Image 1 (cartoon, rainbow, N blue to C red):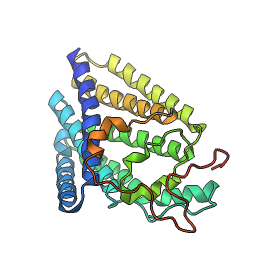
Image 2: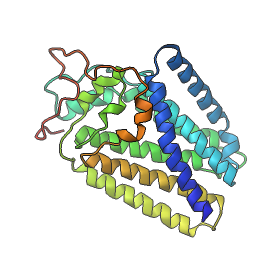
Image 3: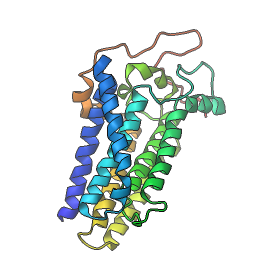
Image 4: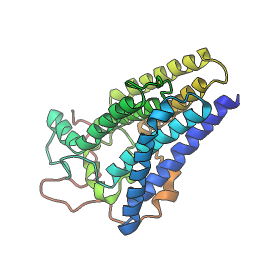
Length: 283
């Protein structure tokens, strides 16, 4: 039973604590913020460097090490985005009057560099840990964890763009406040039920795989880590679909930042940040 409960507890704690640390580093000002980002960059480089060894170590230690490496790599991407280092070609509020494909293109331009960097990282993880690895690279924990995080994040972003009752806008630091103008705070979009159904299906597939794996094996640990992340992603989707906020879980990290106005200076061509898009507005 410990082979199942321990990875569940590890993921839940890491999800909560690492998110708080990233939020703190993203809001840190001056030298503290710069040092934090440099330290995170060095940690990510070390995590990538450890991939050939970790991918060939299919033991409990190797699986947990892979999980930690994946979180560090993912955390660097999140921090680089929140600090405005890797975002997109558009760094301004959404112009008035955009709809349909024009609105989607403008929104994608705000995160295009970030999305391309994530895809490139997934490819790099595959190359370093599995493609042509002489040791076989049988430990897929790093790639599995990153894939789950990436898929759940893409789904959440699309749902926030299409429409949700709650978008957790407080997570964005002041420098990225313009992104809120691309959110649609309204009734849930038709995509949300499909996202929830896909998450449930992924959880079932992983659950069946866990049942088929040898009891107490490293494979069970690895699959349980991924399953727990899927369930946490499902929980985050449900919180988007309901008029609730998960901000309270990380208030300890967000209240340490200097207070800023949540809205950028209004311009003749840009709506106020946080403006609620009409429910009748279509993609």
